[in-house]
Image (cartoon, rainbow, N blue to C red; front, side):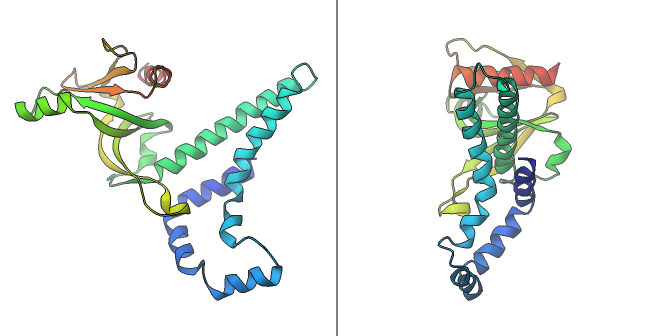
Length: 229
């Protein structure tokens, strides 16, 4: 399991270069001839996906085994294995999104571990700024993808890429970030069970965050609270 994760993690670290090379040579005569000689029905790109596919299949296999092993010896070990692979899947998924961030002037590794990432509606209500801009920002939500790190939360704009395969993955344009050392949180916003507030520098900047569901909100609030305490 860990070997597959390490293979995929290595790919993530070198993804831009790997994809560039693959675009140049995937249709070359060399690869086509290798496929013909080996009598392989699938092209090389199909095999490149296998480490990712195997990781996702482990959880399905473990869940199916647990389904028929609840009262059997070893059920606790199966549950522990499932918990571990779900953690690995989350790490892989988070890595896929994080490496797609563009425009950040710095090293993301300096921000500490990536804890959560997801898309939200965001309203702003800042003390500073032109009144008309403030009014517009207050009533019109922005679509933002948030990345919660141990030391900062990043606000990015998600951009869907056209194409197929690797080309279809979204990218995220970095907009701004907040240092968690100066962040506060209001867990409940009146009138909407999916909203919470992130405020900065004694409410000089206020961000009203609307999660897709109350459950997603609760998960984020709990994780932010852990960071702050």
